[in-house]
Length: 119
Image (cartoon, rainbow, N blue to C red; front, side, top):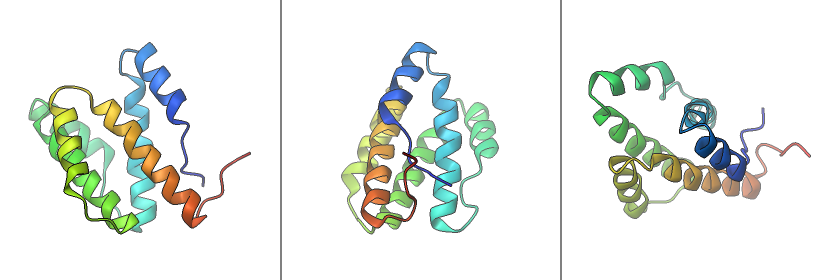
């Protein structure tokens, strides 16, 4: 399965649909992270329920953990990404971090050629 996403299209749809498209992006990123990590670490429905129960606080933690998983996959140890993910999530611009996150994953997949993009 191809885990590359069109970041520009995701941003446009997220803006046009008042943020609802980001739910699709989050779901796809959960699936992609689990496939690349070869484990079931990210469960979409769990993130959604816990985020609702904690009024969004769990979602900030989730974005932080997702960023740590990204670093684990690409073999990078940079805390600035984690700080950026948390800050953007706190101020309500998590969809911008998701676009940055997907760009990093797309670059990693291009470099490793693990999943060939559909042409």
